[in-house]
Amino acid sequence: MRPFFFPVVSLLLALGLTACDENPPRFEQAEPGEALSGGSTTVIKSDQNAFSMPSANLSPVRRLDFSVGNSFFRNPWVIAPSSTTARDGLGPLLNTNACQNCHIKDGRGRPAEAERGNAVSMLVRLSIPAGKEHAEVIHERGIAPEPTYGGQLQDMAIPGVAPEGKVRLSYSAHTERFADGFQVELRSPQLTITDLGYGPMHPDTQFSVRVAPAMVGLGLLEAIPEAAILANADPDDRNGDGISGRPNRVFDQVTRETSLGRFGWKAGQPNLNQQNADAFFNDMGLTTSLLSGSSCTQAQTDCLAMPDGSEPEVSDHILSLVLFYSRNLGVPARRNVDDPQVLAGKTLFHRAGCQSCHVPKFSTGEAAEPELANQVIRPYTDLLLHDMGEGLADHRPEFEATGREWRTPPLWGLGMTEAVSGHTQLLHDGRARNPLEAILWHGGEAERAKQAVLGFDSDERSALLAFLESL
Image (cartoon, rainbow, N blue to C red; front, side, top):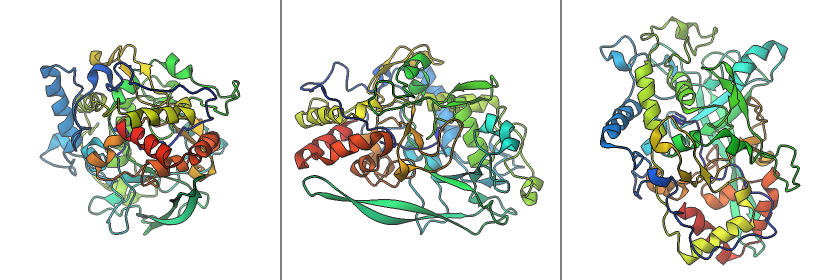
């Protein structure tokens, strides 16, 4: 699933390095409070459970609510009808039966592997080029769904229903060379969908592979004032730095109005509650008061004929518990912030211009949860859209995001990815196998910054990676 989230993903530097700063600061010591990425919500944890802890400033009573929300996030849902009425209604078409299956230990997902039966923590978004006849659905969903398979391919199904298809990725390779001769092989993914269960797709179908992003700090991102996000937007690049960050404007299911997008790989969701409801609906086939009806299309008659659970299948009470859980997953503290190599890497991060999109610091304002309000946080994102070039393009628009634009993903928690998720695969589709590869995939607005990094020697590369590992 996506951040229950989601989601995804990811993830690291899926967006953002920018034009070099002509007068970058030099960091010789850590800033006060720099290790506390989530302010007083920051958790001190550096093992496989680093992404699964409640905000450090939650009271014992509030921690009980967190634990209950975690149970609905972690445990599987079942097919209706069932004696387990609080968790029934799964499917008929789905990607998984529990949120935790995609966000394992609340961390990042990974792309599909050939030996796996299904993609699990990776999904494929679908759409077709929009025409005038799609105006209403574009307004509410941001895309024109594929007529037979909808807006997302579901590669699993309950008994009696055919899955929509099987998903696999293969890779081709090319090499990037640093100025000192050091070479890095990058892999380009090619998507293959086989065993289509409901006939051929529209000939102009647009595909976008997405992996589940990490869950930490989502409530803090939701609490950043809109004005603070928009202050970094420069859609016309009036300052001439080559960076044109701009907000996505998306549909809010509650207000029925357009709102600032914050969540998802293209900032396609305005808030966590809607992100969660969308994940319940599309990833598991479960309805909520925000999204009702069926995720089956009219062409999927067997799917439409299957029984469902109560309406909604996810009650408002359960939805609120999952929301509380997803808002309060604490960000782990940084490590080694005073280490000379880490500080040198921080200087290089700024010299390359990475901070222009991966904005280091914000202050939260008022928040739905009082523990998240008025915190100085260091997420390393601007939550804006950036053109990342043809190499990362999925050619699939989403609301106002183009097929070359992605939201800058936060970098906090990056250094804990391997400990939590058991891998270091990054970017929206997991193509990058480590942070250095992720950097070298940057293009478009980030091309000048990538070229700056390609000029780094061995010691500078090590310092930059040490800084990223400390986040």
